[in-house]
Figure (cartoon, helix red, strand yellow):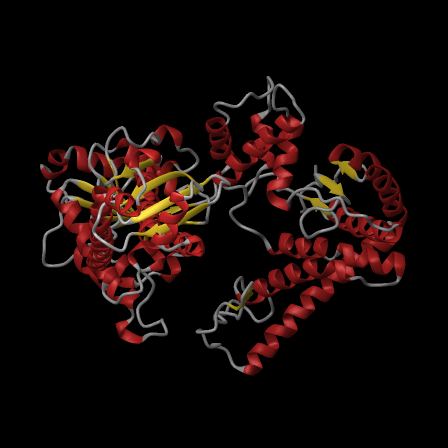
Length: 619
């Protein structure tokens, strides 16, 4: 159940409308008080042009030029027989009847009526005084309320903004989680700790203080936490690491204290901190010194999890995909006692995840889910969910009644490579792309340790003009030196085909060269697969989307050793490129046949490709 001090969206809309109506009323009052008198005074100024003396008015009445007379306090309004209107003002306290008598005019001979405006004048005078004062009072009240609200907001900065879930509020349970069975067992035990603490205390077991979930993005860390919220019969406090931080110094630590105070008051309870690396990074690595706001927040978490105050009935679960950045004090026993690594799902896990996310969707009968699981090696749980959703969208776009295998296949390609792009390409560009992709496919097919080619296409997707899809036929834990060498060779097959056929080089191989170089460097630096031997050469500088990603790590090897590393990397790349060049040159005729069919169909599936080149020798 969410905290009551957080207004619902409906209430927010009501408050907004109320504010708009109040200001509309105030604007109307302002117009009535200040603008309307100006308009009236302007009309009165306009009417001054028709003013006459009272003697002139009496003379016109006597001469029977006036049709009707109206008396409004001191004003005498004359309506003439020609339709014009003129105004006169009485200069004495005599009534209008007395003035007619003094002038010798019989009152019965004149059509006049008296309008008593004394009351309206009095009301107008009162409103002219009260309304401005009332408007000023309302204005000051609004200012004071705004100031009080601002002061309350300032003092509420240090309060926790965690969302609280009770039993029945979260619909996700452990039955909705698959592919991470070991992690699920750990968290099922955590829930049991809190539900049945006596069972463990009888044997002297201490409740774990915290569980840290880390793994790649999309493997199900947050989903597992949501399942804990759905299964636990205790209060569940959920908060993201970034929500602790604020522009004011000390707010993060204050929110940590308030969060644990609430959790202890509701004990037994669970606290879930998502993306804890936002506040749990190693201290002393920032730019703001020891008084960095993030470090103060981390220090407070360390104290709350394992300080002098006992904290037996509050379990902390945290998730991150950058476990290597966390502070060692956060990872020691007594704080995060259990560290659970979530890996990419294996074939059985992927098949179970597909079955879960297939619920509620209309698929064709006899969908080969095992084949889909084989096709999606390297997909995370989030990728699989997104793939099935994209497949449903594709089927709905084509107004199909059910989702077929072809929709799943297209969705899998779209998730990894992006949507199809309709680009107008010249015949020369299409031919270059076809030979480039055919070079990848041919070299891959003829290397014995490489997996079979699944698809070749010259249809543009994402940033590429074509692609050669080579999904692994099985999940591999280890990679051999032979396989890595052949992977680099296959990556350079496109550049080799360009040089063999056109005696030219294009920029289309830039991404292949980048990946091949990274893999070759990893062989030398990380895997020890070079004449330099199994030696730790330290972290290498990496460049990401925003530049150098390891700027704070100085190189731990000498310039002379770095030169040897670069030389070994170049030797590997040169040797692999030579092999790819020789394969393409030797089987140039097969390459031409692939390109001929590819230019006609634009996409070749495995069966069509193997009709041209034959079955793979390793099978």
